[in-house]
Image (cartoon, rainbow, N blue to C red; front, side, top):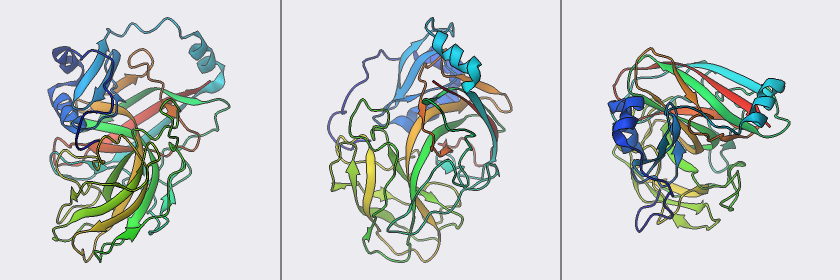
Amino acid sequence: MYKNGKAPYQLKMASTHAAKLEQWLGKECLENLCKAMKGYYWHIPVGNVPGNVLAYNGDFYGEIRGGSGFSSLSDLINESTGGKQRKAYFAKVGSTGVIGVTNSLWKTGNSPPSGTNASNAPLGNIVSGTSTGAIPLDFVAPDTRHLVGAGAMASVAGNNLLLYDRLWQVNKIMTGTFVESITGAPSRYQSTTGTAQDYAGGNFLFFEVGGVALPATAHNWVSGTYVNQAGTAGQRLPTLTGNASAIVNRLDHPTNQWYAPLFGTDVGIKELDTIALSAAVASGEIIIVIGHPLAWMPCPIANLWIPFDLVGTTFNLARIFDDAALAFLEVGKPATGATSYNMELTMVSG
């Protein structure tokens, strides 16, 4: 997430044994994850690995244990068997892409249906669990809701899914080079306190091609300013190279770049304040999104159900807010063809 200088912090964990990790993720998924996380200084738990493994800056940290689980799970078991466990099932038919780039599944079907369009600048709109396109959550948790497990099956091998909370989005005017002011902001993950569950650290920004492809016009994203995870305003986004003729649902980013880099040692974005294009683009649709990463879900083998035990493995228990808008990115596509997914999430409140 930072551009220059040293990392803002280093995980106090040993590096994971690469050969052992490849046995669980497969060579292709592992290599793509390394590329995807290079320069991203926020830890994201990796599913389908027994132990406690986190992806961080192109490397992996933590221990592969063998899946024996933990001894202090009595409260979680009580909550699960006491009616506080829920499952969400969903299916997505992805779109064609470009090898090494990232596609969004937000505006693809079939369950949940294609996501809602963003509102125009300057306000944009907050995305929540009731927004069309978000994975529906069928109850308001009496306590706090946590992700304890998941599963996915992909029709194409080697895909890496990123589960994230889609916080906020805005539709960008493409026909001019003026600096556009943004006044809207997310409502979740806005705390500047590093130990808070809604800390803004890890929040990432991306530029998503909506329902209309871009014309063959070279362009860059420039003049961006934002408020960082510490609440500091006026931070400048490094220039991000866009893509002429970018197709529907891909991110308008360079290859192997699923997030817009932030300034200096920043590790999160609270809100976007200004943005501009280096060249006017006559048509097309770009949705600018702020999201918060929750978990990696690698799918190394085609048409095989891959379970992700987030208790006996990563023991992450990521918080899922009641108004969360859960969505997926296909990060660093391994093939150009469309991939179909069947997936589930298991959550427990307690």
